[in-house]
Image (tube, rainbow, N blue to C red; front, side, top):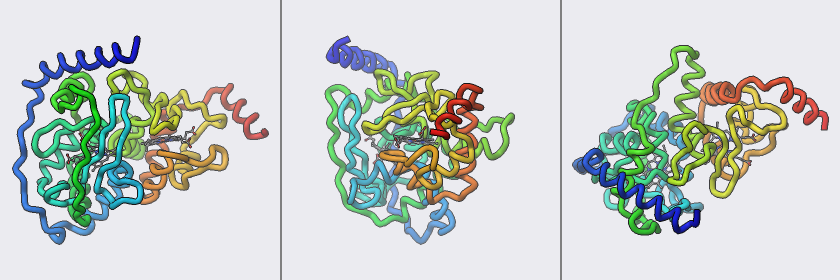
Length: 313
Ligand code: HEC
Ligand code: HEC
């Protein structure tokens, strides 16, 4: 299919669904508040929020290299055009200073801003929707106690009609399920902690999953490998191509140190991920590693033999 026809189809599908979605997806504005006094937040909660923000990699997308932390403006290229991240410092005019906790909770869970406008899924709320209210409260405490930075939002560069935010309602109807994390009773606490962090805030699947023509994660292909900022994000499920199969121990080392003797250095966007994870307690890293290892499964005899050859080489 030619690119133009593809784009045309994409747009008409979204337009039809957007119209259907309007009635369903209408979200009202949440009243602005005066910026909460930073001293009103519990310091322990703020510290927890800092760890959670590291898991969510918020700073990577919301900071221009060399710029002020969380002030937004980073250009994120998508197949549809360029989307700029927003200022999430508590500046009252250009950031989220007038957002109540409820408005923040809604943005993480539903991908809607304070005024009720739909946010583009370049903001990975299709993962963040799994985050608990409690963790969002800590994230809010962390963000609202950062220094406010005045930085106007950059205009997005999206073609008509994708520049109309109501189109996102159509996308959500097709691809977005709001919902909190549900623990798997058949698994232990560690595994569930790892699943919660990896599938939710950690949004590993945002980079490690292939996308369909409308930019959504391909159904049934979770963690089968994707692309991030021009880098290949290898499969991290049973399709893992690693010459030496990963196990929980190697994953813990890699996620903690940013490299592993048998797997090399984490580069590009993954270097940011492992750099940020450095803030986490060992138990959380081990939990993410245990969950990831279980998704990769036990390597079969052929892969074990391949590993031996790779180790000897
Ligand atoms: C992969 C990149 C990416 C990551 C990671 C990311 N964001 Fe964002 N975020 C964006 C983009 C892009 C937008 C703007 C979307 C739009 O304009 O529709 C955004 C918008 C937002 C908004 C709405 C702000 C507004 O003014 O409307 C909030 C709140 C937010 N992000 C918080 C966070 C938090 C908290 C984290 C970490 C837990 C985070 N983001 C991680 C890309 C990202
Ligand atoms: C922003 C995009 C992005 C996110 C988010 C991300 N990754 Fe990655 N990941 C990558 C890229 C790109 C690579 C390849 C890095 C390289 O070539 O050195 C990679 C590599 C890896 C590898 C090494 C794979 C191999 O076989 O060499 C593992 C393991 C991994 N990621 C796990 C995770 C886990 C677990 C998470 C969630 C906590 C995660 N990643 C989140 C982009 C991402």
